[in-house]
Image (cartoon, rainbow, N blue to C red; front, side, top):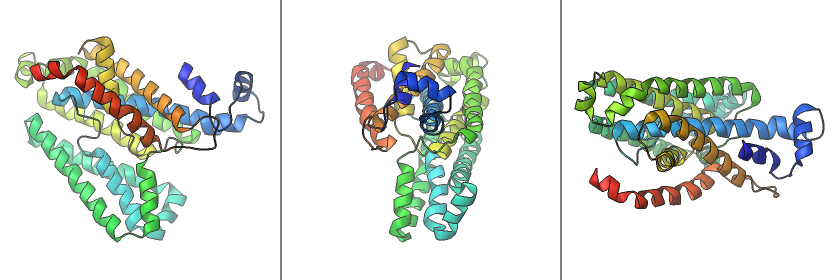
Length: 320
């Protein structure tokens, strides 16, 4: 809450505390800045951070891999392919669609949904989690390869627009779109709470989980669906946001010192929201008319954080 308030106060123009509350309630000179620019950005950071953290936690628990993240199954690559087809291949026709019908979000959703559908189909066919992980990585690699081919033939202006999208953007969600964004993210985060017991059982291994009465195949399908939708929705609205889904679950384990998902899911969501709000606050460079790409800040913060966590826990993971 404190960092959210700070994010509302700090920016290119610093808003005093008195002006903050009056601007949220009354129609004064700060109302547009607060209600149309900063509040949607803060809400987006909270929802996107929580969604990516929960998706990352689900993937790490499902694959029992500490380096798994929300995009490990290629959903982000599929979303990027959809946007690339619009921006790079669609050319001027594509950008008319962007201006008229918010085409970037539409094509991002279609690309993510296509890859998620493939992964869910493979989840039914492949019984082994490690093989499914490899298959997901290959699907993502294929989508990324298609994007590279499109970039090779695309004009430089289109490539620049696509690269800007890949840097992430928390300003893209307007207040009119916030209800649907919140409904999807909070709805699927809430859905993950119904999978707490199966997830705890899967930490013991597939055979042990089956002996405890867990339908491993059904759980695998549901967990991938939840994580895929959360990652896909955030990517559609904000672009691919890096490292939050990888770092927040590790931080939650470090703080809680438990592997129980009854604690880890809400704590990961809270820490993911906190991390992205702080990174966004840094990206706005308070006091300067400057806005850094959100992925540059999350990578600068997240990469050293994840490395330090790996070094501190290397003996534990080696023993496992």
